[in-house]
Image (tube, rainbow over all chains, first blue to last red):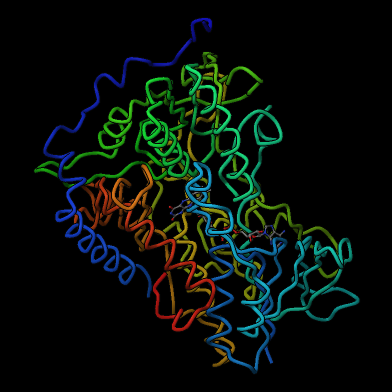
Length: 53
Length: 485
Ligand SMILES: Cc1cc2nc3c(=O)[nH]c(=O)nc-3n(C[C@H](O)[C@H](O)[C@H](O)COP(=O)(O)OP(=O)(O)OC[C@H]3O[C@@H](n4cnc5c(N)ncnc54)[C@H](O)[C@@H]3O)c2cc1C
């Protein structure tokens, strides 16, 4: 057993949000993620094109 | 015939060299000087660090690519630049020291008409006692560091397979370190790998950071529009860590690491420590230590470089308080104010100031991330400088039709959170512009319509796609130039 560890602000993680069923499902859903893949590519391209002259 | 020298063959320098040669053609000379015979796609080092990619998958030999493109290549370190020439050389030149086995230690002076300094950062492990792969902590900053980290990680996995608990501490190893994104994705990838092996329950995972709040990422945080709210990246980042079972310590200025514990000061000036079995901490970054000399061989490094060793460019370096920082302070041509034929791109240029609000504790320790200059802006800077030099060579005009300020360009950061074509995950984050512009966007600092923060399988596909796309481009395969930065 290790000695107790002195830690900065150990309880803060308890106040964070955590995704639940539907969000987790959509993150893995092949149909939804394929759609998001194209959305990301479109948005990334907009940023790339708009970022320099 | 113009002679252009590019120092460094990283994301920025390699991009600059490829575009320079394409634009200038056979009539002009482009030479790259870089010590490593390999090109590395740095963002994929994360996957080397968890054994998902081999080093061979993230690197390739530079010499054949440069030979194919007609670019000169010297495997050497730039030691000093002489922008006024000297008694021996009427023209400006760079002093280099060869490192290739057949020429090791030999020095050479290479004249130039234009110089692009893209030497990236010196990984300043010595800035924190006990830091670095030669001491007590791991690194993923280079492919060989990442491979070494994977070896050490495997040793921890072996212990966990025997039922032992292990403590992992990942984050920043210096009070002013940057590159939080890379450390963040390494923490998530480790946890994902341990979960895949059904060992996650034996891991105590900690994220330690110099950020004032999570999600700052050295860019003062950002806002994302999502689910009917505008949410700060703090909420987004904390949520990911909670989901992965990673606890965190923020506002931590790591000052020492010994074989058991990481010692850090908090924002109140109190010292704490956290024990670890495996630590990966990003070091502070500095300039690579190149010196500059004038016509009489006098040291003019102060004129050319900022105090941190990075090169001064067309930024406003007037010291000013946080409240007066402006988007217009950021450079757009990357031209040296002292020598108009010298440019610095990527991590090698000196930013005018940070993006995160400075925080200093009562002991005078500044616990503030320095601004990141990630891959995408580094590539764009390389491209824009190459286009401007080609324009100047071809027209004889000394102007800059192409500009790319970090306060006018966006960035895409894909934070890997686990590997696998069906099981992988990554957070796609975009911001526009990178440097918040509070005059133009008084409410959120950036254009909220361009900002994304979303985690999922598609993010992993994006990261994988970027890996193959940019390796293809860097290898100068057919139509490479059609792939945008
Ligand atoms: C693990 C990791 C993951 C990352 N992930 C992402 C990501 O997902 N997205 C993103 O946008 N960014 C990411 N980044 C950041 C990105 O890799 C850097 O912003 C980028 O590499 C900077 O490019 P650069 O060309 O300025 O410097 P570098 O890539 O560091 O290249 C510097 C070059 O200069 C050479 N050099 C050094 N000293 C000398 C000298 N004295 N003379 C000549 N040559 C010299 C070096 O050998 C090297 O070839 C990541 C960084 C790390 C460490």
